[in-house]
Length: 389
Image (cartoon, rainbow, N blue to C red; front, side, top):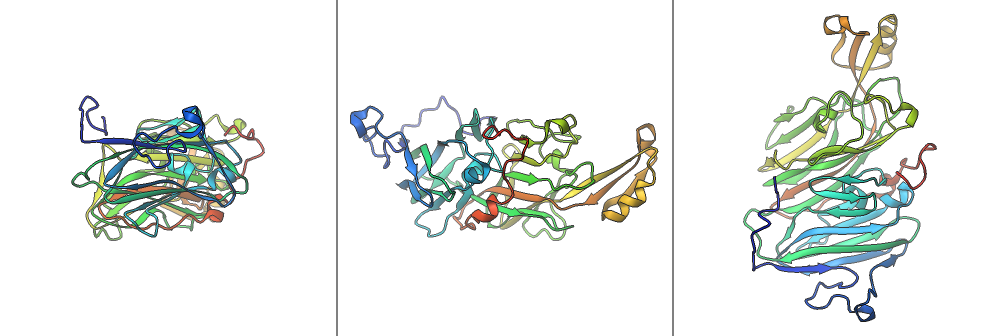
């Protein structure tokens, strides 16, 4: 599947442009003027608290590729670099998200990751290929809300072109619930006015310690256009939404994957291990989620309890400590031939965050990133080699 059309088709109406520090306006014939064209302005130091306008372009047009890089640093610093996008002269952003999350990774940690829409190449080069049409104007800003200056490089490739019928504005909203509430599903996205399309999400989980064997039994749910208590689309489990099964280790694919699984090496032998941090993405490209009026996307926080044969007393002990979900304890049946005596689903609380990607025909505002909330509790673990995750 090629989401970007026929590469052999030559559309002479497209006016291709590019913005970087070497050509900050994107003007024709204005690139590389510093130092007589001999690489005079490839980067810029961005101070603590500084906000920089990366692009300020009159439309109509379409951003087609964003690349940037800044040196890897502790997770709190990486996640405090914020990207915001304003359409058509609006005072409030339609995109407000930590940069690293925008490119497909949560928790301020960068690793090699290639998806259908993003690429973090060698864990250093941040690329995004989300089509970003705009009718009248687009302004892209970056803020260093961290505690140290950054050396920043970037390039934004775009075309000036007439708006295509049905082209939506890309919105990206970041949210975090640290921790979630028992039996209340984490909301990935809500409040967008249609017509629109839920493109997908980048979700981060800080798995909180307890005696459950597994954290990811919760179902993804998509409510649209008047759905009440029950959604139109309901998944079967967290790892199933990510496209894998029977636990979730580190992996990537075009439309879904979990590129970041932070777990001590001694606990990394089983896909059902409980990591400290997980980051996954899901792009609804060949399976579009369309809404006419409104939408809400959520995911449950449900885990698993397992009692081995010979430890039957644990059924009562675990049942007293946890609120069971689903159909309660399961014994016998398919378990008879296994090493398990009993299995149960149980409600749990974890630390969830999400960058939600939504196209809508009407440009809308999203909440601005709460930086202190975004960077809380994501620091290096003792077993992580600083700068490598």
